[in-house]
Image (cartoon, rainbow, N blue to C red; front, side, top):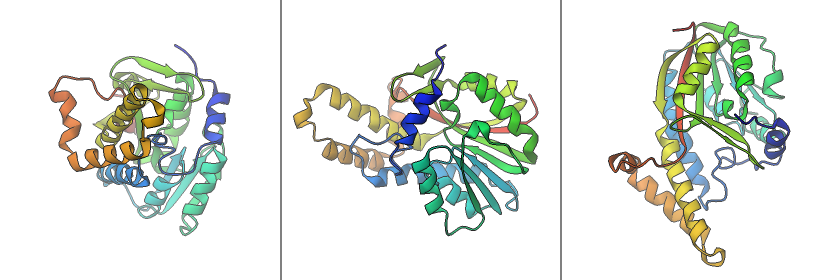
Length: 270
């Protein structure tokens, strides 16, 4: 299996545009900014349900916090949030967004080098593991397990494929693992998988990304009108939600190519 080159990964994110579309990998498809907010609000409803039993007096560790939308979300629900981000432009966006929240501590640093100093009710990895090689996924999670409160959880939101592992090389690097692969990795870390849930808001927007990508591949660039096509695609998906996300399964089609899942993890192997 191909290994990620962390220098390349870091270089890509050091130049990332600090918007809600950039970290969601939704730039370049002509979508309005509202598409990112639509996806975030859909995901936040799922997260709200998954964390509702947690102690609001506890601390959240948000690793790879991006532009800070999740740190801001958790700040209104927990006593303290520690948000860690290696990309300077994304860290600065988090710091600005969370300035009104005195219970948020934003840290500019490498997630792998971060040393826990607290005990956490929730550790949130919102698309972090896909940028780590397998050995580092295991090392990171094993390091975090002893710092979970009793009853606390690690909540991962990771882009997945239907089977096996796909490693993307080049300017943008990532590793996409299937659900069963993640289950195996989590078990090696002393974690049990309490719940797995398909991230429908991600799938909906990913359908749009992959359809626009097909449009760009077959239509000459001078007449692509991506801004118009992207806006139309977004509104078609939004107005067709939620039933439109079910159409590929009804037709027996494996679409979109990439999907996404939430994993609720607890200390203690199955």
